[in-house]
Image 1 (cartoon, rainbow, N blue to C red):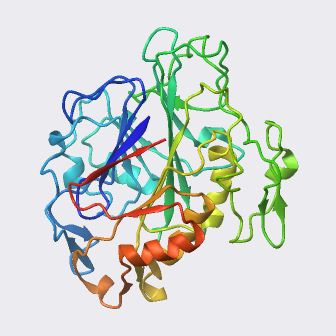
Image 2: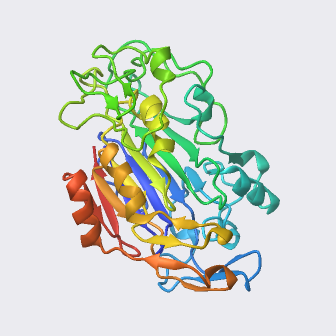
Length: 403
């Protein structure tokens, strides 16, 4: 099982393609094979990006995109739009999508979903506003059912969750959590009970049929843990050594400290049956987000899925700052991302939203940017998370991360 990360422009447009273990290599790079699941992230290929009025802010790519039209890639299962700002929600690029597609679902944060529906280019039923993740409401996790590769195999699942910042004046800071559990061709266990209150969407954006009855139970509620805990100087959140749901007292624990962390790689392992497929996990946060906001998602979604260590972390390296009266922090960069990479034990941190764009307008007159090289990021991350790889993907470059 693996995920291929293909950087389609110099900024923050990525194509994520998840592939299960049981498949042979595709005949060509654009072939679609059973069990794969693809997500096109924040597509902006060409042309300017203007916010409100060109005199306020106008951005242009300085590096040509790897493709000139979205028709040059296979239809994605999901188009993910993380912001309503035009460098993420670029309407001319979105119009390149086939509005009659029966495969693609558009998931967007609420303001972006409203803007996309206003285009009147897509069937409104294909555009979903992502709800904010709530730890006590599994309906806030959007789930995609992936059919088994063969009769008697295990169905897979992809999930996407929207985690916004609290009291964010700029409206820039959020994270998108993504997980992928692959389907298989081999029979495993004999029982599967989906959560009754969890909305699921098939690859076509409609409610999924009940999965076959020979599927295994959902992944474990918590990892096996001997002496580790989620702790800070002021509180402690301990995970049971037995695979049991988190208790009510655990769910009510305060998340007030930035030093909370999710165990260590060496002491955390899954109680899943030995043949249950692993789950890949990605956090996409181009502008950054406080780890305190991500922690409930990690505890109540990633841990039960045994989806840690984090497979890939997509986050800016450069820190960008405006005066408070222009929204304050724009990109959290290395200082904001290192805590997330450390606490979620990220295997790889890939630079996102760090293109040296041609920017003009009133909004950028006072902007201050502190750029960080890959070597500086690697040095800082190695102090906290020595196993984390650090990458900068050039436009058109791709890499594969395996489970």
